[in-house]
Image (tube, rainbow, N blue to C red; front, side, top):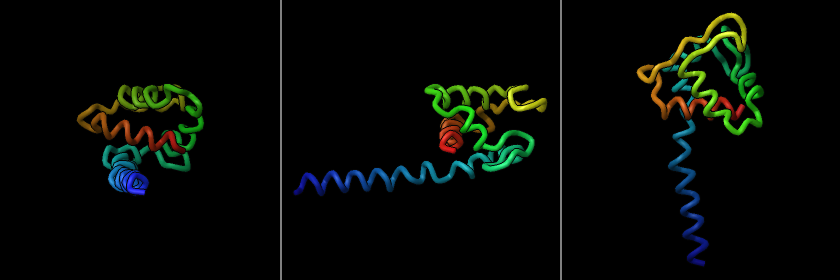
Length: 106
């Protein structure tokens, strides 16, 4: 019984302490300026995040590919308007990876 209780408490603690790490991705994206061109549900200047998630769905290396594309910028994949590069000074690696995981969740 003690083992079950301990495992349950460990699981709850993990959820409680890790949830905030995934709660602020939209705020991070806003702070980095991503929401000036993207929204969750509809195309603005760039594609909606749901479109991006659908494009990368099922690709094992999706997070790495998308993080690289965000970091370096790109052109021609979603239309004629280029996406500028996003250097670490604008969004650090940890925040970039968190936002990419959030986007890929759809």
